Length: 113
Length: 112
Image (cartoon, each protein chain N blue to C red):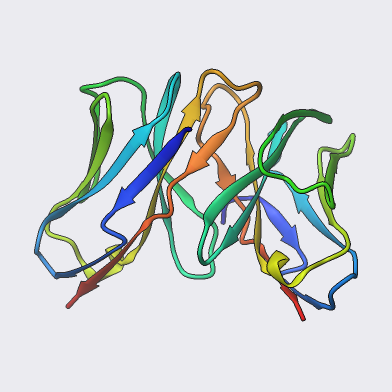
């Protein structure tokens, strides 16, 4: 158990809809990262937050947005969903001086029909 | 363009048959290279961090090494429980914040 909690574990929705994925980082970790993993592209970095502030952006679509709240949990909002958005979405957290030691949640599997 | 490439994509080994996985990178400003293990349906699990060429790290049957252009994950006398996808990731110096770019992984199957 990594200590990172993601909900929901599975989500099935239709094209055009909007969903919110939630992540609770490990206790004490200030950084949260979001990744998308699809079969053909591997783990794609989306966005990073540190203590409530956006720190780095990767290949995140404009239809996607995220935020980190004062209690450090984070949400990833996906809107105007397309079939190609079907993927596993992982949240990871890190803390302290051990940069790169990311602790991943078990992911949220999104299926867009 | 920054790139992380892992090879082979898939590897089948007999139990006890040692081998190596490769991660090559063409990035500027590498701050660190990381290895993760991912089991099916699970999130990646951190294994090693390597910061400079010549550095080596070991954990049980796994040993990671780093050169200026690539990293190897050596698996000695693997067991079936070592079956997983092994991912490498690079941490880039030039970007703002901490961005980690992952390769697509090597899927390892160890046959009893």
